[in-house]
Length: 530
Image (spheres, rainbow, N blue to C red):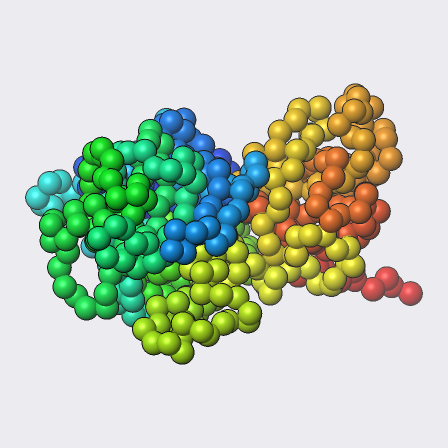
């Protein structure tokens, strides 16, 4: 009798819970070791911004009511608007308290048969062999009990002080406290409902100038305000926090301080760290255990969810089929490189945007002003904010197929409307997290009768080809995709990144693309005997 081994996930924060749910969607059982008791303490001032490529995690039922979709971004300097960006449907970031996201993920995990939550379990040791991983844990409130768990793989999602990383002996170099922010969550009415923004050089009547504050709306008339702090390690006293709040509100309300409710305060410290390795045999690191970002508005939770989206489908392929060493190695190659680029971009920008002398005030970086650098992370632009690109991935197709779209290979795909062969309609992002997607651009397809699709144009041959591919794939049709000619085939990875765009009739190219995604070298046919 074959024993089914789960993937062991160490840590039950947003990263570990999201990974368990992503693996369950692909039919992989998980055991989540939770050092705590499952209770989540609300912290209104601890929030996360999820860009469009990760925003679907905020769509869980328990999170929707507490999630704010931004309508626009406004940057002001000395009270005047210097930049204004309206978000269209599908392009807006979403903002919610981190405890709300974590509770929603936990509720969803409790309702999933393939996810087993194990509270009160603290990892103390792990051993690997050719067939799996053995985890040693202590149990109980006092840690007096002990147990062993066997799994096919183990993923450390256990935070910046990761026990998994330490047991694997992986260094975690970087810098500590590169930025500090005073943070407050308030319930009040501000002049820009639904708009997030950066406000510099605010001046209130008789109250002195406020250097900079970021205001981000939350659901229910709540706001998170962030003020950058000096480089020293001085404490932020309650009186100093109230003074910041009052001077800021007075500057926004012509000297008056409106009524408000102070919900929570804190000091947010941003570190820059990157683990040397993200894989050691059958053990992996993800989230805070693998990296720490956060300066200049970089979003650590969003980067952690990108780790999840990248790793889950690769683990699922190896769990179901084995022979996926290239696929598993690509997780570190893609995600560590993407986070490393983000950290380097922050390191290059920090001296320029936080400069204290006249020269740095005038410096431009590739023609882009200081205010732009301060907002790129929030708007998902430039090196500071654009989602990771996997163009140089070991899973890239063996050749360029020559079809160009507005989405470069390796980048996240646009969320266009799609139709399945059975006639059901949805958005492309709703299909992510399962098998690879093959999307055909077919103008006029939304008015076709789906009953005739299987005998129309390229569809019959495409449908037949999908059954011969080395990975099960799903065929979808879309009316149009940004920048793609008609009858283009888009090969979309399960994590939502474009693997390749090729002509619709290029079936050999389609096979090569999906074979590359499987991480298996194309087999050369044996020579025929004479």
